[in-house]
Amino acid sequence: MRYGISGVLTLCLAAMAALPARGGEDQDIRYMRAQGKAFAKVARDIRPAVVFIEIRQNRTLLMTPMNPFGLFGDEFFDRFFRHRMPQGGTQRQVPVGQGSGFIVTPQGHILTNNHVIRDADAIAVKLADGQEFMARVLGADEQCDLAVLKIYTPAPLAF
Image (cartoon, rainbow, N blue to C red; front, side):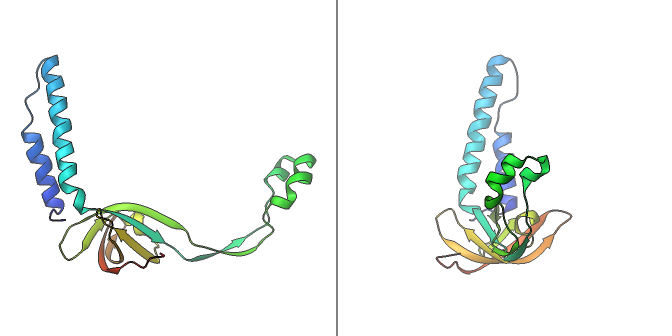
């Protein structure tokens, strides 16, 4: 949680600078092993700042009668599967989306992608230590596909 985006980038650059220069086949293998260890260290160091984001959308959907088997004009499928097709009407559905983000300030500001939270009616954030919070969108840029969230309260038991 103590690392922001600049901290993550600094760790990555420092890890890459510590890697040996490339050379023959043996050096390539050592280089790849060192690179793998460097990335593992960065991932271990920033893990507390990574969050899981889940969104909910409350939408009423209009269901229309549909018979995919009728497209083929097959009387057999129509006769046996007609009763299993939706008959129409409205249905309340709660679409769920999910993604990830990074805590960038001690106050609970989170950087994520705009497409993760677009059209969200409720946003829940789960920290690496298992704590769950509700969050609100402070700002979003669709063109850059970035959004800033702010944790504001512990999440209810049932989202």
